[in-house]
Amino acid sequence: MWQPEISLDAAGLTHVGRERSRNEDQFLVARLERNLRVMSTSVRDVAPMMSPPRDGTLLLVADGMGGGADGDVASSVAVRSVIQTVITALPWSGSLEGPPSGASIPTPQSTLPGVRRGLTSALVEGDVAVRREAARTGTDKPMGTTLTVAYIQWPYLYVAHVGDSRAYLWRGKELLQLTTDHTLAEKLKERTDITIDDSSPWHHVLWNALGAGETSAVEPEVHRHQLEEGDVLMLCSDGLTKHVEDRVIGLTLDASTAAGDACERLVNLANVDGGTDNITVVACYCLPLDFSIDSDAPTLAVPAVDTKAITAIRQPAVIEPIGHDEDDDPTRR
Image 1: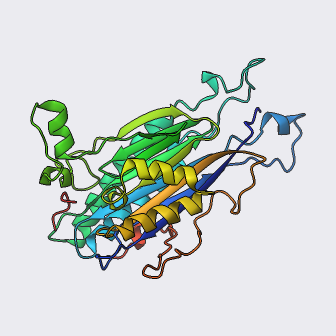
Image 2: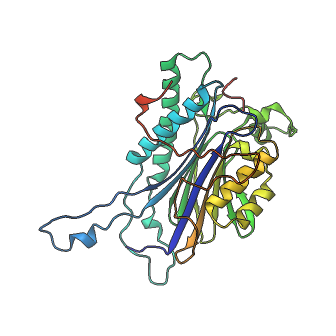
Image 3: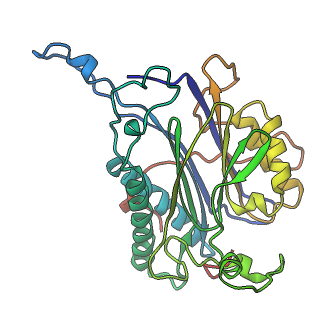
């Protein structure tokens, strides 16, 4: 099976910020691997025929809402539910054919046609899980969470998104926002001629979220992109974008030496500017195989933040069955 000569350096970092007492954000960096190892068989040449499918990389950021302990419960429940659904819903086998002679990327037939459906299903199941948890605990405040997921099956990137966390792509000295903010302000901009001021409270009201959007059913935004060597993918909660403008995000991704370094720098920038919310960043660098970096990819562990006033809290995701979970207006950010 044809394999691209590429390495993905991925890392994540979350921080409570400088004003909040509780961190309601969650992140995940994971490799999806399902290999078939033939121990014994009577069939000739079965091992080459049953080559392991191409590995996938899963990146995720969730920003919980609800106040008290409800926000971090919502984001945790959503992450666990999405992971469980992704494992069972995503297709695992691509074409075993290599690219045509002279081609540098796989043909369309070697992509995974069920990925869109799998990711949509994962977010819908996440919505159901959060609503079920809210009903189980009997909380008087509906709980909810944003969720932005990136699934890389090189060279393809699938993004599934609900809420106002964001996915960005840094390519050729240009920063592209891949997702849309699911706020009432953005919806009004799309559907009316009303001018929405940057200070409008509608920027902080979500119409689409897992568990607590303005609509009764979640509406996942799912799309596909084609990655190139040298691209940098970044997911973040709005705790970053409230304080760090796009231009600075792009320059920081460009100047960083590795994914962990980029996460560190961006979290520091948000905190230096005030850190009014929880801050979460996940970065993934698409590097040539012979590129030397200080950390293995992907990884959840990153160096501690090096500032006098700020101590970074690293928060690797711990995956447990949904039934083992612990027990302000969720649509207001």
